[in-house]
Length: 293
Image (cartoon, rainbow, N blue to C red; front, top):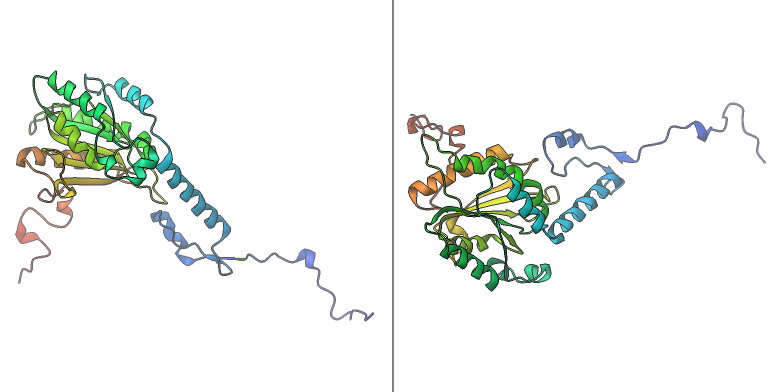
């Protein structure tokens, strides 16, 4: 065996510093400002293991949000216990989709009430002497998790604003809150129509994203009736703690509701101008999009 030259000793691999196989991405610092998957870096030609595991966890949470059923009785009990809940007890309803599998395979069934629910609303409406200004409809949609996380804190902001008179607007007469299982956005139209409500506000669990399995959507329709398309609705999306916060979402909703009541319409003809001052002023001569030359 050859001897090791004293001038070239064998390296001591036990003392060598381990090499980090992950190459960091300089865009990683931008992750402080967004939930988007940017600046992940790489390990060889692959995504680092920690980011791959985080992606798989987010995907699992999105799937759980779609398939986990809404705890309807528990939600109704919580709504009933709230100080701002309308005097009439919340009404539990169901779409024509019997279960989750049918709901996912037949979107049209999720837009229609089953016969028992229709009969329940007709009976309730017949017992009333006057019409309602607004029906609030809570729908599980594609994320029951979004309803359970957001519905109480959001309504805690919205309903007091609806029921307390101001110098500018009269209070809204509210129908009992309706909780619909296996429903989609358009199911608010027959609910509002059967309750004789002038306007309907649908709060629905939105399709979960990989960074937002808990997003709540709001859809407003003036003069609801079966068969209306999305052109007749106004939408406020991404209502959640990490998205559009509850006070701001309530402010936007109140603006749309009051404008809808004043103008007797909703949808494409009703614009959300709550942020208009950011890009233009009331005086059109100050609009930066208009040349002053």
